[in-house]
Image (cartoon, rainbow, N blue to C red; front, side, top):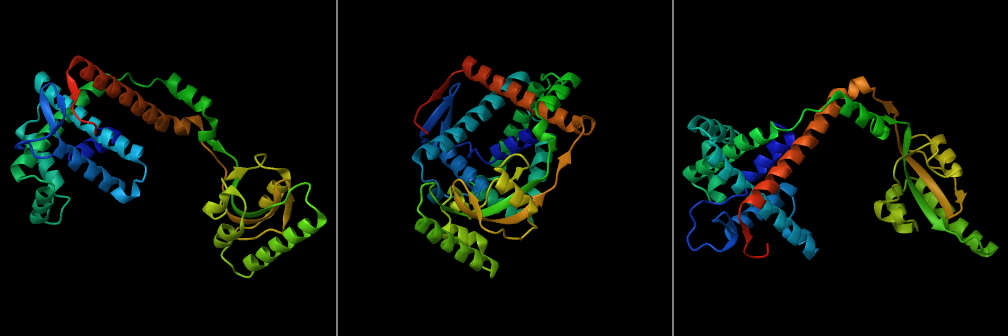
Length: 320
């Protein structure tokens, strides 16, 4: 099973709530089958756990809305796949359900800890088995859909390799932190002297063992200040010549002299050198083929979801 499919099904396994709910408030209906507000809330909570986030970290209301809608769409797709599995006769056998149930339980230290977890999610052992049945059935149906994805040809692999040289070849790069004090071209001699004195003092502190990252946060006037002066890695020919020459002359951990550049005065610290690499087409072939096959599989699955939604009756009853 492709990695992305395994991840999707693993996420699905905790996105549904117990099947029998009284007086449910529905947020959607899929061909007459309701998806409850409780299922959506449980799914959203699980999504946050997987992201290692909490509600307080989501300060943008639109992002919150988008995340909740993504969970609802996942639940809708889950229901569509389950319904199609029943129609096409690929519902999981008792043996498949039992094997999947045991595989999940085996991830817990004891049977009791597993049961405590599923009950905390709102399941009983029986209702969880029913959920597993739905998930394995969905997997069976998806497997049939993905079998329709055309195999990746040698020509497609070759074209991707040739069209994306930066993914397979990279020259040596340097990863730097810098501290920059702005200095206008029309600055007076007094202003230049004052700015140089400031950066010379910062350089003195850095070379005396001061934390370069913290010094950058405190003093730098470059946009990289918020990241402790960290710059994007670059290779030769990708930066201004004085900066490039100074950077590639440094040893790892070494701090440069003061550089005078058009935007101001700077000091650099070389964090590390990133070695050059080159991967031949032959060596990359199977990884590229696997990557392109996953893209094709995702496209086939997306088209199937679109077909099922268009052919069926999916109703969004409340904003997610």
